[in-house]
Length: 129
Image (cartoon, rainbow, N blue to C red; front, side, top):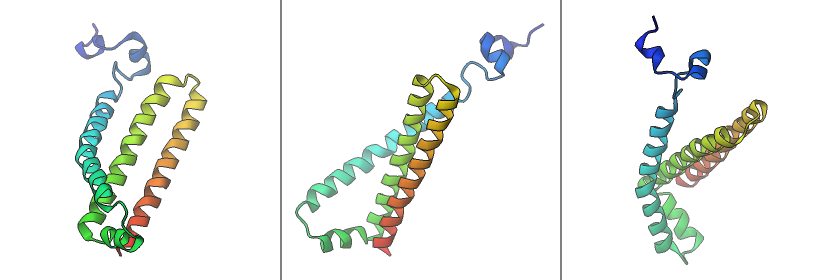
């Protein structure tokens, strides 16, 4: 007799052992949490850019050097790139059919988001410290 859990799986999911949703719920929640975190960070960032528009380089770097600003910029960049990676992963999984291509593109996206995110955070820290 089949267990109650196995009856909830699709036939393909039972064969693969992945279940009907694999780890999609966790991924879905992470996308929502990062999106919600980006709302106030983006509003703050855009408002700051409006206030700083027309300012000199020295004023801008002095603004970035403030501890609270540096932390908020780091969060904005980190959460933004994480959200980008999660969204790109969904697009890759949904629209690329060949497994080998899917793996290569996923690796490139992961590498690029980590590299660019780290470079941006390094730049913020270099100005702030």
